Image: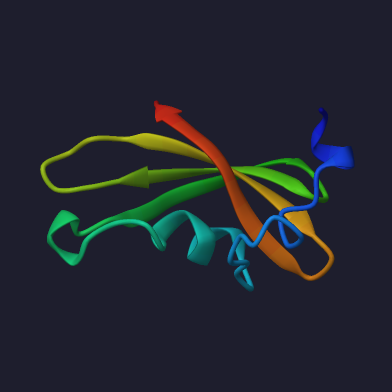
Length: 77
């Protein structure tokens, strides 16, 4: 199934107003997660590069559906 055929909202996922907000939502406060940069792949797909303390960079892939952003996956950067 492609991203275009999958509805995050219909699956009960919580959406966010920005990709940065979506990328940071899953981190505990102790991680001190922060956005380093956003790499736009298209109008509705971005990679958000997040770093934590101690330094551990992650690439969080976010997809926009309607007016909300959803986390689709992540990987070490």
